[in-house]
Length: 503
Image 1 (cartoon, one colour):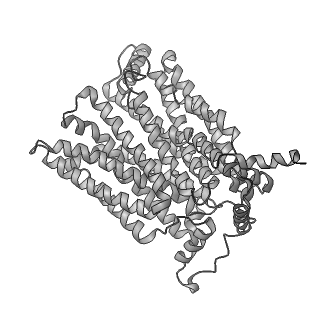
Image 2 (cartoon, one colour; image 1 turned 90 degrees about the vertical axis):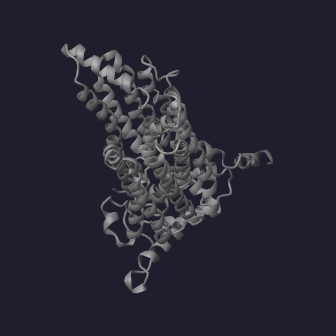
Image 3 (cartoon, one colour; image 1 turned 180 degrees about the horizontal axis):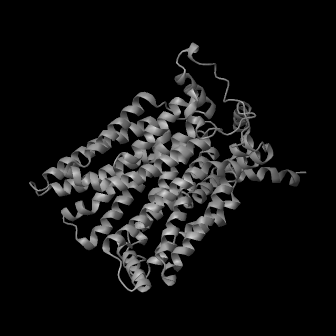
């Protein structure tokens, strides 16, 4: 009889959170890691790809491609990535509902494989169009992964760790950027012969996810609330927690399921029409825009010239830029540890305030760098300090908003809004930054400072704290904020009763 009782005890001998940790790694390496990695590696082979484009055109037509058209082709290669990301963000919601969180991430890797094949054989085929198509496909993949990964992890984590687990998306983004900077060194894959392998190396994290994620559980919330599969949900929950005693959390999920009974998924436009979602949608749009318009990407773009002004040799500038990637990775880890202790609001307000301070000092240093010999060093220090401030606050916390402020039925559509907004802003900033830099010169950062101030003020006055609260508790508090007087809105009875898995 004792031997028959041993199997049920085995789940309790698992290391607590081990499966959750493996789930975080498997989802992250093929999700936001791919976004950061492919955003970063394209900077190393700029000259090599432009030369390949010119040589290809010459071989086809017998005359070289004019410089302005070479630049146009290169610009298209770069801009097709955020354009694909926009399409991917719009696909993520329907995929997450129809296929589930885990299966959507797995299917998404078919785009990675296709893009890697195009990159790898582009030089042998003599086709720069293959690079352009590959950038579009890898952009779509990044858009899908960036939306579904935090949704999947946030729904799989316990409420005490929900913020920290969701913030790992920022860690994998920063890790992808840094690894891309390292792999893109001329000594590795950034040379004139190896650049097709550099672009095709996105296949490695894709294969890792394809081989590891099938062994891990689906989101328990999706299994119970969307699919109504209580038995599989219980198994997934026990694996993720490393114990068979999940009665309390299962009861919480059942309560959320009862509130969502018979619900259908919200459509994109319904988020903007529902008064009960007014504050949530406004917060998502304002803070999502602030994260992309706060100037962090501009700091990366301007860092090379600042490092050169500070006396860093041209051949060593790339190593200094790797240091900026390490800074963002370090602060992402710090934010992951701190978010469940100090809360979301403190990190956001503190991050934007520090960014405003260091951005102001950076502007002063740029204005005085021709007058005082030590000002370029101050400007270089401000770049690192600014990136540290961004990493500890807006970089990670903003991505959690769509998960925590919206219920199970509105969450996929909220991530579609968040993703579409992010990729659109990324495209516009990349397009407009050269003109801002040319028009404002040393004062180019002033518009970004205004955005940082607005982000801090909005967070302080309008964003509620969600630390340690269940999704139902957050929904009730937001309902109270959306309808501050009882006669202005109906009593909260959970979301509108519709079918939950229908688009």
